[in-house]
Image (cartoon, rainbow, N blue to C red; front, side, top):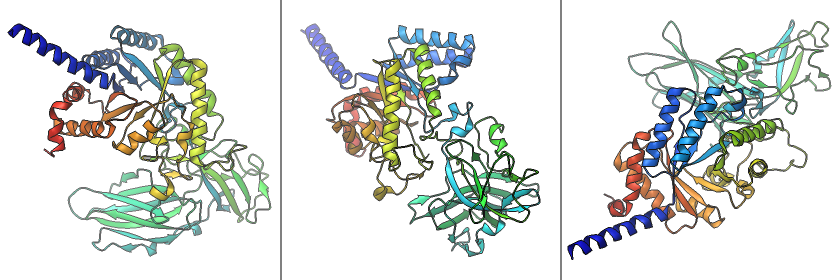
Length: 535
């Protein structure tokens, strides 16, 4: 009887385990380890084995080379094949990314001018001799910035000219020992538009001062709220002046235009002034970087220029503005990006033959300031993104009709980055908002649902018929934090149809926690009550 009881107990345990496995038939790992060296490839293969031991069925392998694959040496291709062979032996499916619109650095070795542009309209330049630079009279009156109550910064409302590109400079002078800390903020429209989105450039002088620089475009604003904040140290030499043609982008659809002050005469590049570019963009520290702590290019007149000394000019162009320290957005409105994206999809399919493609539409924070294409004059950002996604989707289908197609959730839900203006204001430096973008998702697109889990966020895609993978973890380092993360996802997804699996989503390569995370997922029923009770 004891033996029968043991057999029955084991049978029941196996039944429970199978039921749990059926609840989430797929287990994913976000995999950012590359294959550029033999050592990194060995590490990647070992991580693949570790993932399999944790029950993983799928790997989202993001460290691919995309359109650069034809330039890769044979040794790299050999490492890819070894990785593929190991995945096949382990029965793990590989999904690869393509169409990186939100973080487009991989494409900028082709042409750094493919980033999204922001317009400058009729900035006044003054000619001195054979060069023209911004009229210093366009600098903002920083005397209107008043000290904060506790003496840790200044703030105030300043008049600005719409669509003007400004550079802010100030100094922090240490007055005692301690950490140097400062940040600046420029906003408008009741905080619904934040203009400062780039991390500052900071330089320490031989005298121990800290010089801060930042940039912003006034966009549609006629006045902005400026705040410069710091800790216990002293603030000096605040200056906000026109940035000139700093980080100018040169493409046919976003031209540089130079006219007389009254706008009646249009001057010609090559005839009246020499070709214009910001050359540092292409060389420092490598192509596709966008430092802004250097002098802006000036207009240099040709020998036979019609422009005269002392004349005022109106200069219009588009520039780039980086988000944070390293995020560059690909232009959604430039036709020249499509051959690169198609090449990426083709090369990835030919080399990887993946289970699926993850179309990497994610955190698109600069967009829709460029001239619209014919027929798109009244497009909202959401409508443009919907059309863009459909085109990318169809490209994948051209090269692999049966591959599964995935995308991140954030750009296609009103519960994250596609919120309407009335709910959250402008989305970063976008000319509008992304609501409605979800209309571009075919029903067979599988959503990689990330961010803060909510029932509304899960339900939105479930109601539209999209399968989903829950992308959890986010580099939690304690058992308690991992439990909290799992509990949130499980609670909000309970009863939702089409949940295919769970992803171990580590941005910081903390794969040492993968095994424990999935073990906690396996034993969720045993400990979930303690979370519900607030323990």
